[in-house]
Image (cartoon, rainbow, N blue to C red; front, side, top):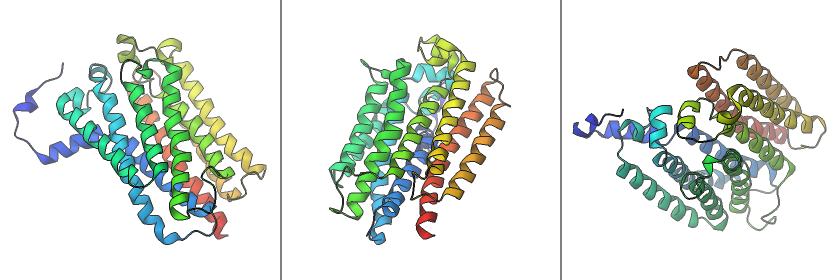
Length: 321
């Protein structure tokens, strides 16, 4: 049962900011920051005749509304899941009572408006990217649709945003911002398509894996996830093979010479090594121990983060070679 004793304690900006950081779900903040940065770098590397001086400013300008939208999406999800989070994630601010429901609603409303306003100032491509991400995040959490109740639609929302909307939308935005009018807005090089396919599959693995440690709360509140329906071991193995497909896809395309802007030795070495480490660590996970499952889930997120560093790095190395 959640206590409310913190309501009688004096207000502290330090405590409030710590709660806001937890409310923002830091791992998603890191993921958004890296993805925006990576796609900006790839727009520079993969498009000819680009002035690089404008890149840092373009990155910061696009990142601010993206982070606001990120907090809107994860905050909205927490507002609709307070009872479930008291079982699955009692440390979150709304579940613990560190934030009131009214405070959560104010944060979500303000940051949602800021995201749309700041994106609109930078052009239709960024507005469409941010707006579509927020719209999908809204129907994922809110009734009457509340698509997170359905495994297929929940996964589609997550990899649709993280994979398709973010990668294609931000790449198009940065290409137009840095070098307007040189190529049509819909032109996407093979390397961006490959990264998009990787992230779509990877986000699907994250989407189904994230429900494994939440089995108890989801079952109690009749959220029919794949884990509830098929069991944690099946979903765990499915996630591992989807992630293996991700790495195999990029390595296969590289070996076939279909990614000419990528440095092959760097990509094959790093991705093969990460794949081996993932399988080695997976053998040590006890599916009866929630803490071990959660640690491996965070490791998967680190692999996700790394891809937004390694793949652009492979393109930069090839460009400089």
